[in-house]
Amino acid sequence: MKKFLTWVSLGVIFVAGLYACITMAAMPRTYEGQNANVSVYDLRQDPASYDDSTADGAAAVIVQQNLEKTHAVNDVTSIVFDFRGYDTMGEAFILITAVAGSMVILFTHKEKKKEDGKDEK
Image 1 (cartoon, rainbow, N blue to C red):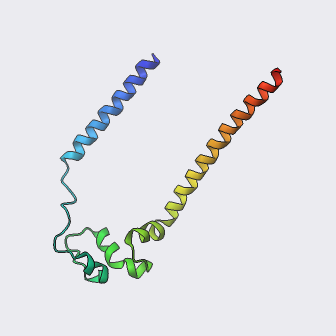
Image 2: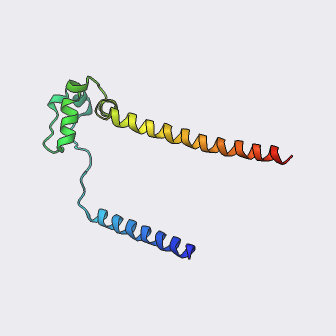
C-alpha cells in the first residue's frame, strides 16, 4: 500500500509539472531580446537618459532611480543589499538555523551511540 501511494503521489506531481510546463510554453514571451539601440556605455554614464518606453515599470525604475536612491553603481548589488537587504538577511538566518539544527541532531545521535556502546561493555 505504501509503494502504491508513493507512485500515485509521484504521478500527480509529474502530471501537475507537465501541465505547468505546457501552460507556460503557451504564454506569450515577455522578453524579446536585447534592444539593439541601447549603448551599454551610454547607459552606464547617464542612466537618466535611458529610453524606457519599451521596458516594464520595474526595469525603468531600477535603471533611472538606482543611483539617486542607493548611490550604488551596480544595479544588482543595490537590489540585493539595499532594496532586499532584510529579505537576504532573513534567508541567511534561516540557512544558519537549518545547518545548526542539523548539526545538533547529528551530534546528539552520535553521542547516544557512544554512550550505548560504553554501557554494554
